[in-house]
Image (cartoon, rainbow, N blue to C red; front, side, top):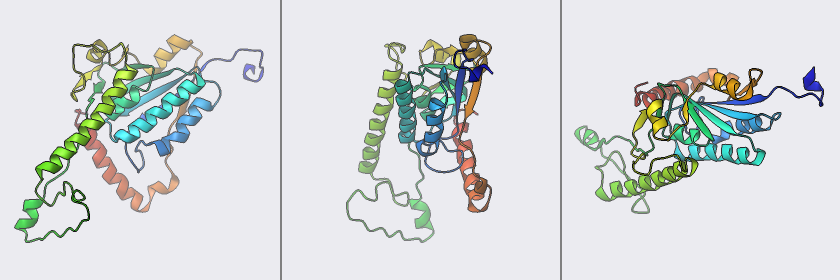
Length: 265
């Protein structure tokens, strides 16, 4: 009844946004700004939440999508003056940690994997394979760099050098984001941007997170036992169960498992 009476104080509400999966372009379960945008907007706008909690379980993915999602969270947090607190589940690595750093505070389970502040590009070289099987590769371009790192041709040193420059530039953006978001919390005498990962206790000592904590007990301690939780997540569409979407989801599932496997999960 008191929720309908303006002169009575309501119990505080925490909006919970679930960010679980690989960060990338398209596909069910993939985290990107286009699909998450309406969810994040609603979480910050519906009612007057005392805080927004991020449930994060992501091995990373696209640096651009990580940046877009993180920027949206920061923009809304500042516009509406709402604190954001991240809670890491299995892993917040690479782009997953980028999302966590968008929060004002980060907490994790003792066995959570945190970090991997680096950039990676991986592919295959099949030039010898097609040669051994009598296959002739025919590529025609306008622009000498258009076929850079063609997997069916031997890697050219200048192409590798060019790719490394791109990776270093993206890595620089990543480091700038973490340095800004964790300002005053990171040790000055240690390089944390090597791509290394840590469990939560060590991550706390390094200033990457605030400490050990689980979402509901933590929020009840901060906002009181009567705090309410309102969950927000991307919903699966009805037609995603059928046709080619099933095959796409299966392939995506394999790729996602491979991403998590890099951290022993």
